[in-house]
Every structure is written in structure tokens, then in C-alpha cells.
Length: 232
Image (tube, rainbow, N blue to C red; front, side, top):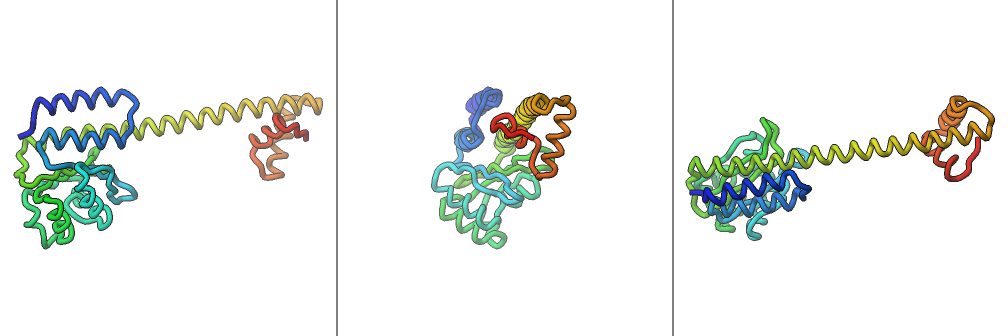
């Protein structure tokens, strides 16, 4: 049975982290530690999708890294199926699946793992990775799975929030670059208009036509006009 008090405390701390800047790897590592503590597990791991395949992010404790790496290398096992099918996989006894995943079961046995649960980190039917729960023996009661599922949902929220934040940063960079380009182009237009005794509109046409003829960007040509003294 999971530790309900620690579970509530963990969710509270995760929610507070979500509204502050955070490192995704550090958060997922903390998730693995916390879920193992809350559910009294022998360990936990997190893998994320990369081009449709699972890659290990973290495994706690260290001896479980080999099992997560086996999964990553061979792309086989209950977690791979849970990821591709966006469903929870509960395995009370891995030995019952030796015919299905012989190499994976042997690798798990070498780490002392005989029971595990795999929960997809998913939004609707789109999976981003998996949260794996490791135990020496476990029947996976419904309350424990529900608690782990909520923590997996929190991790999914972190991933989506981080992706959105990254997209916003990229957009801000693009807007900043566009603004910088506009400034230097306006400066170049003014310089050419003054040096050639023409209007701002005529100066821009001259700059644009020159850029086209020489297969260069208008911004790069404008940079040369403003900062290198180029005159057309």
C-alpha cells in the first residue's frame, strides 16, 4: 500500500515546481525517486520517446540502469508495448512472460526484479514515454496503480509544459531576429537614400534588387551597408 501522506506531499511539491523554471531531467529523476518511495518499490525508471523508440532518461537505483538500457537497445519488453499501445502494463510475475520476452526477463532477473508495472506518459493517445515501477514481488493493487498514474500524469504535464516553453522561446528568438533585421534594413535604406539622393522607397528597391542579383539576403546586404560601409 502506498504512503498516502508522502504521496500528497510529493504532488504538492511537484505542482509548485511546475510554475517555476526547472530542468526536465532533474524533475524526471526526482519523479523516479519519489514514486519508488511512495509505493515502497525497489526502484523506478523513466524513458522518453525519440523517433518512435524509447530511450532511458533515468533509473533509480543505479543497478536498474542495465535493465532500462536493455529495453532501449533491443526495444522489447512490457514497457515498449505499453508505450506503443498507450496502455498500462501490470506484470506481477515476469517469469510468466519468459517465452514472450526471454532476453528482457533474464536481464530483469539479474537485477532482482520479478514484478513491474509500466505506465505510459501520455496525453490522450499520444505517448511521450514510460514510467516503470520495479519490485521484487508485487500484485499491483488498484490504489497503488492509481497513485502512480497520477504521478505519471504530473510528469507528462512537465514534458508538455517544457515543450511549450521551448516553443515560446524559439518564437521569441524569431521575433527578436525579425525586429533586429527590420532595424538594420531601415538603417541601410536611410544610408543609401542619403548617399544616392533618392527616396526611402527607391533605396529599398535598389537594395532588394542588388540582393537578388547577387543571391544574398537583404539583411546580410544591409549589415554590410550599415557596419562595413558598402555603397551601391
